[in-house]
Length: 129
Length: 278
Image (tube, rainbow over all chains, first blue to last red; front, side):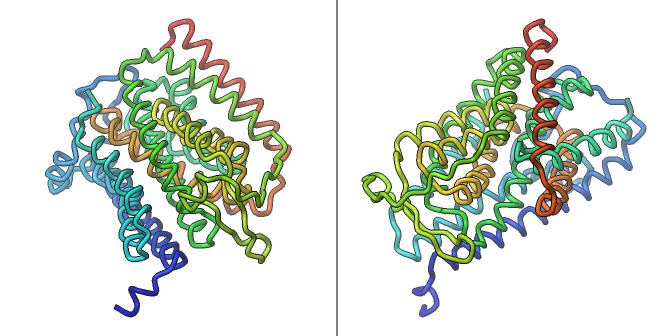
């Protein structure tokens, strides 16, 4: 507990900085692995992105991506990595909220929670249609 | 075009976009979109989806370093993120209903504006006028290490900055870019922050802002792994190399040349948008 009491802005900065770095490394690593598998399986196929088709991309929900990633298909792994990348800055907000709570800066706990709530509302998919 | 050829071309293009974007301060997103749409004929919806992912990757990567150096003002960042995330979602939702041609025209205009902004002479507005009540209430005033000395600064016009951020967030969500140029206006010119603080804090907010709109794009099926994968890998690598070169290189001439190239691209996007090319 002694340690928790002495948390300062500097500690938060260091913690947040590390989280961001690790998050980018891990998610980009997953994207690269998925990309290699994808190229291995599909490299000779022809593609066409000239017209946007809402139904072309099958993996577009968080739940869908999580359930498909275990099939080890290239596209599913890439999409999972991209999702982890999207989650990294969101996790950063969550971590800042916890840190501000320990620092007893309740105004910024509230501000952080508000930002999270805005993103969560978007994550539920309600704004996409 | 086969998957392999497409992936390789996009990978190289994205690398160049990330490299030049970081050297000129324009960001990779604004360059990769014209490259994909004008160069490869990719639908602008896919280009925007892929670009927003690359914005998250590059801004998060560099934010990590800035935060640790103590340059970023995390309170200002989090406070303004309320505005940018609301704006980002708003922009991404507007993009769903807006004709692609309009998106292309708006994109072209912002591209011209952003490239002009990189040429602007920077004037540091740092001040120690602590009269702003908003800044005091939200604890936004701070200090940063300037040439080894911890230098204090005061924040002005919190409301104006917040409003400008709402606008910056909306454009970011609408066009799939980081809209760093607008964020810097809000923080440099309106809130009067020191450069180092405004640019790094803008970078810090970009990830969360882009994540908010990326989620909307994901649900819309605009994030296609086949495009987003080479784009985000290429841009991130390019930006990383660019940041290393930036320390040594003189970029004034490069910025001039680049501003001209980008303006030509922008005019092409506007022209194509107006003549129904999208």
